[in-house]
Length: 253
Image 1 (spheres, rainbow, N blue to C red):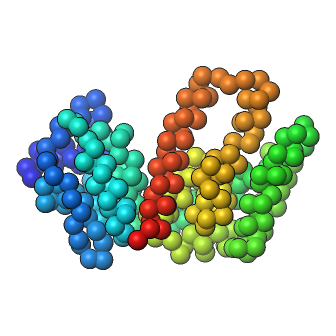
Image 2 (cartoon, rainbow, N blue to C red):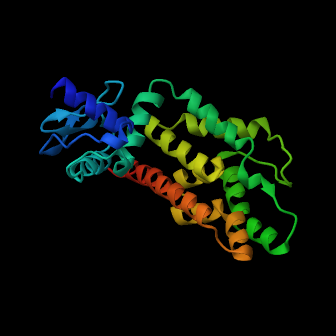
Image 3 (cartoon, rainbow, N blue to C red):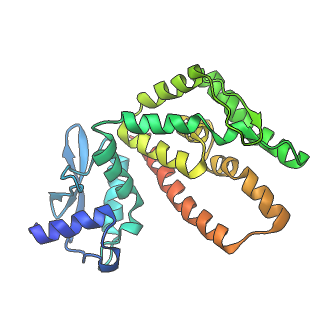
């Protein structure tokens, strides 16, 4: 692979140069071995991340899904159509060598988690929050030993150190790929507890997305949708689905 093509590939993986996308320069995409990982090969050569690491993942289903993203590229390489590649690149380059910062960031989200801030009116919204959020708080308590405190309103409520420590411990047991996906779901939903519940298998993706949008859906029902909000939500949903797919593939072998 020439230096020029490798540079274009690097920029494509990084999501740069979107207005001047590099042409597809490879014919065959395959999965190779780099024990204990699997790599994606373009004409027999491994793809490398912007930090020059191999795009190597721990399970074959994920490697095959990555290979499919690259094989699906047409005349040009469009990073917008390779969400799994972007997530795995982040996991390899930014998380794997030092996962603690992302663990701390997710745990910080838990300190002001969406599920802990409740409406006190109207009754319908109060009831909907309770129905969708209380089971997730119970899950955190029962499965993780993380008991969180709820409050009516938006004033900051400090959470018990034991709860945050339990979340941090759970995250510390995950690999870089799972952490990257959990982080994305956390930031997209505003809830670490929703993200952890998805990873743990407590809720489905559909249930998690609904739980994250209780308040927004209530407002839409009362006042109707707006185009800007709908566009933002659709973009977030695509990113959410990619992170969910990554978690799902990691559990297959």
